[in-house]
Image (tube, rainbow, N blue to C red; front, side):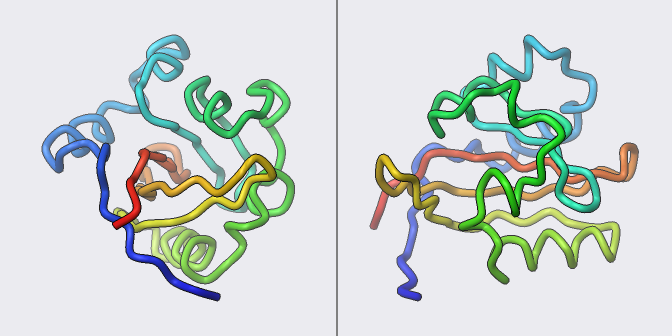
Length: 137
């Protein structure tokens, strides 16, 4: 598999990202949908608990139909790789995860280069996936 360097173009600054992740669980559904970035909450096995409108629009999929589905198996099988799912599983195992990395979603309508931030929440024993647009370098 060819690896491409991704320069993060629209990832929130570390300060803004830290602030968002600290308060994400206090956001109501409308505030989550209004975020300029994709946001998905996964349980320990990858079942989708929350999936915001921004990510649904960018991925060109129905927002409501994603809830309860397995992210890695049913929604985004291209993420079932060590670089993504491996990080997720290790973070869940350790109950500690806060990592940002470049990734390419391979959609039928074309590739989408993004920056992914995975954040493990002690409070809900879940992982938040923040999806930010990125530009190829």
